[in-house]
Amino acid sequence: MTVTATEMTPAEWEVMRVIWTMGDLGSNDIIKAVQEKRAWTESTIKTLLRRLVKRGALSTSAAGRKFIYHPEIAEKIAMEETSTALFDHLCAMKKGGVLVNLVAETELSQTDIQQLQDLLAAKAKTAPEQVACDCLGPNHEQDCTCSQEASTND
Amino acid sequence: MTVTATEMTPAEWEVMRVIWTMGDLGSNDIIKAVQEKRAWTESTIKTLLRRLVKRGALSTSAAGRKFIYHPEIAEKIAMEETSTALFDHLCAMKKGGVLVNLVAETELSQTDIQQLQDLLAAKAKTAPEQVACDCLGPNHEQDCTCSQEASTND
DNA sequence: AATTCTAGTTGACAAATGTAAACGAAAGAT
DNA sequence: ATCTTTCGTTTACATTTGTCAACTAGAATT
Image (cartoon, rainbow over all chains, first blue to last red; front, side, top):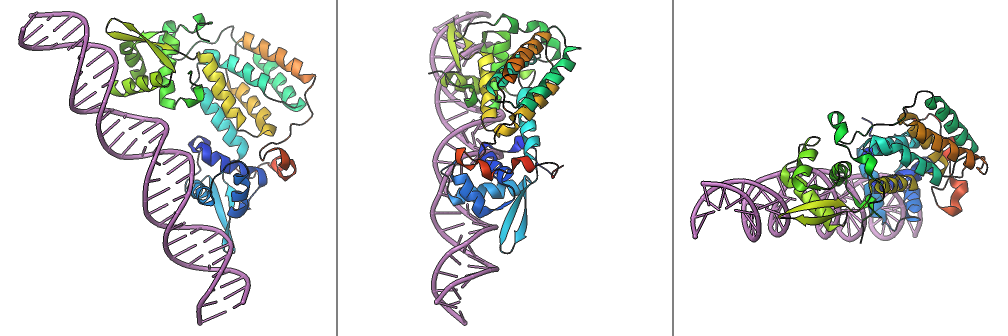
């Protein structure tokens, strides 16, 4: 059974990032790397590693007495799963605005931009004028007061 | 003190969505609306409401014996905070790809698309060829093996 | 005034998560 | 063959979160 990224806790993510970034490693190196960002003890990080292995997010291969940890989920997939999960519980009507915000804040490469532009051009052909709110489920679209929201809150 | 959206738990979000969507409401209506999506008891939802008030995510105004709950955080801001928080712990180098994925999966209105296109056009002028990995902090860029990752995992 | 609804408050408890000390066994060193 | 590292495993415990039932006080009824 392979885990889904949404089942990883924030602390576990931190550990996964190190492994994703530096490649397969022994616990020692993992601990060292994690500790450069978080003041966690060896013990704590070992616990996180063990939990990740138990859940199938990591696998191990023995190298002598030690273990080498291998990610069982690709970083990209994990990131996509997590971001998609987040978007899934946002109001459909407002996802666009959130994306605009994200794109504005994110540093993008020329390639990224190109890909996005191509994608948008394609989507423009069939995009609706407005996306309906789905906050209350299918049969409640009229109850939604989303559109009225402006500057009630600071 | 106003709360940040990232301090809301998933269950609390569910409650907030109802209030955001339907406007200020008494607990009764909130409970009813939430129960159309989740099989939570009255009690549970009351607890969530109380916790949200305690943390400042909601405020109340008395209407006779009852309370009317008002969001203290705008939905859009909450969504942006949450999505930005998520992106903050993704590898900088791969954020672009994640965005492409999100844009591909998200239904967008013509207006959204237009905004994104304008934004991208502007960013294209100064965008770098490549975004550097930042997984291990500033002084470790060489240690990153991000680029090598391809199809090791399914 | 007594009874019954309400709507909000307290207290609880199990599961998940963050955090870590203590323990045990295998590898190396003397 | 010991002694000492070095790793991994077991336990543990405080918080946070999900979920509720029980309780209480004010309002509406009879």
